[in-house]
Image 1 (cartoon, rainbow, N blue to C red):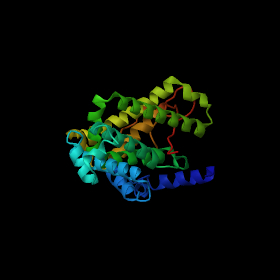
Image 2: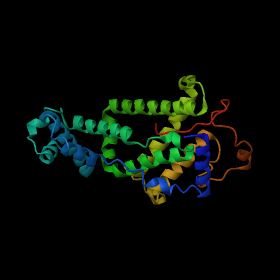
Image 3: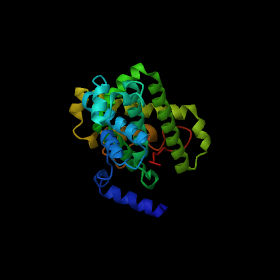
Image 4: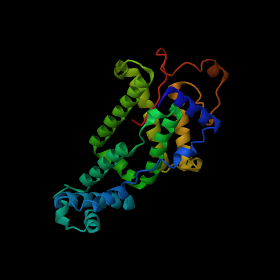
Length: 280
């Protein structure tokens, strides 16, 4: 996209007050149980061993969504998958191993299905599109994700895996920042910049868990629509990183006079640049 077309797009979005409604229908959530069931049905051409494992994985996801990890039983999984109980142990050592495989499938699907092409859009649009995908996907998989939280208390390798994913995501955001602003890629080794991004990512993750996984009553009462939560996350994300009021989002918090006098200063002080998120 040329600079002129980006300016034209930005002007248009400003003209319509950036309601983002035109983008919302394009952002479809991930529902893991449905996705795994569809993949299992479409696997008829694959070898039997692969088909059976996919059926067991889909059945485990469906059972976790219906009953949570605490209610997950091997008998229910094999009955849903239509296989013998002994067959289960050819693929998974126990129910925890099957649940961990479902958790990995969720993480892989989130990476694979997240919005793409973020660099085509102004920063606010790119941030909002990504946040809307995550909000909708957390809401659609809330019951299944409750089981993941239980598993993480007993299986430290899952917490380490989440740490790895979040670190990679923070580096991806910084890399995108470098590409957008012609900044040296040495920024990827800047501990302070990475820690700042990890703080923002952790804030978003915790808010989603509190709202949809743990069902905090006060938060749920404030979240009228999934789009409202995505908008709030995007507003805070933009202000935290850019250090100024986003131009195309509703002013959910006022900007003080002191802040207004320094609105041109980016959050990464001294670097002279602002950070934007893409879906690439």
